[in-house]
Amino acid sequence: NKDNRHYSPSRPSAGRGPRGSDRPAAAANRFLYNLNLTNNWTLSSVDFQLNALAIGLQGLANRNAHTLYLTYPAGWDISYTATVKTYLESSRGFAFQELKSPLDAVAQILEAKESLNVSIQGYVVWDPQVRES
Image (tube, rainbow, N blue to C red; front, side):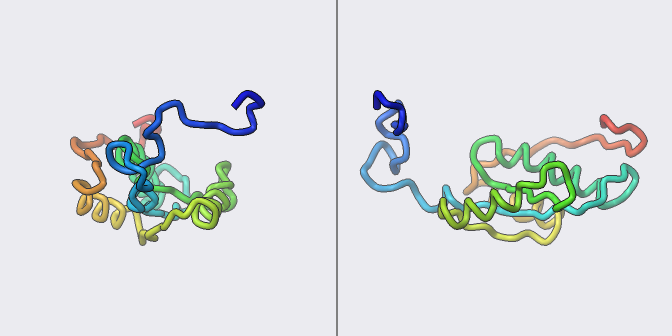
């Protein structure tokens, strides 16, 4: 409205169910996988390589919709992710399925990729001697 205290989406069907119905959007849109990253960022460590895998997977999995949420360790620069996750659960009604490892994340997302509308294909070249790889 004019005093800018309330935001209304510009398209009439925003926030509604299929094809602009009055039904709320499906609860599936509020489901996320969560993966807690480890606090090991040494290039040659297996934990770092698994963290790198998870970060890359997040980019692919979230291309079409929110699918994978990463919670960074408390001492990391991105220290607010646990707080944001709590907010999404308590205030926004998101449900999280906790994943055990980055490999579990790959398995779960590949298993559900059709229903999640996730496109994961190709390969990654990784050289632990070259940071940018």
